[in-house]
Length: 311
Image 1: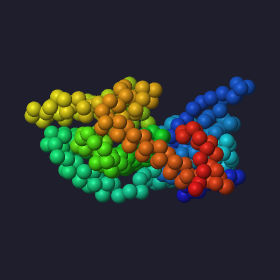
Image 2: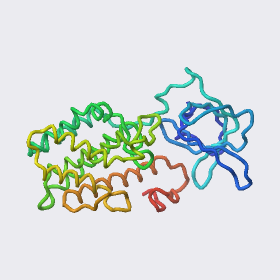
Image 3: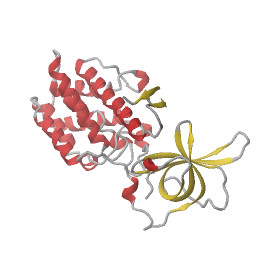
């Protein structure tokens, strides 16, 4: 198989890919064309079908497709110009080739997360966190395989659990370095803050926003998870629940970034910084991994709003 990460400019390819997105658009002259996002386990590439001829057979978003295309460079990114396309037949492709996944051992990552949970001193916070991870069937079944985002960062199978552990590690590093930090509260927020993504995004290979994601969002879903778990623990302190929920509510940091509240406790602020740090550095890492330009400068990275350089 010719993986997306291995494609080169001016190359002719005939290959199968997963159609992640399909848009029917018009040129300035009013001519209809298709704009596609094609995916395999190594990445996503933009593709255009400029000529809707008989060589372009019927297909839909979410199909596996066989394409005949040329690879070109557009605004410093590779793009496919597709001349022929049809739906792939069963047996022509292995679905696992089209699901990007973490290079981490997710079982080891899970055990490390649970180790942090078991180290919590507050019995209420520890029990709530354990129950969410083990007794919530939806979360328990999806935690090791779900992504942390559609496109922004950790947008691959296992990305969510990888992101959660990274945020926990950062929080655990920072907690003893400052006064007044409740480590248990901070680590609980680190575990819970993005678990609503399991409801917000559909499983792979689709990895797209669900109705719950579009209409409710992962932050509100996480509050529901906390309320449900706390209700199952006798005499769970209302103030503790409120402070945990505030960590989740404010982890995006600013209102313009989708945060219903700004961080107003030291734990909430550390969580916001740790979450933002892991997400942004992962964006750098992914940009550097996918780069195929010559020289040290990668060019303008829209998601990071800057030009970045190899060091």
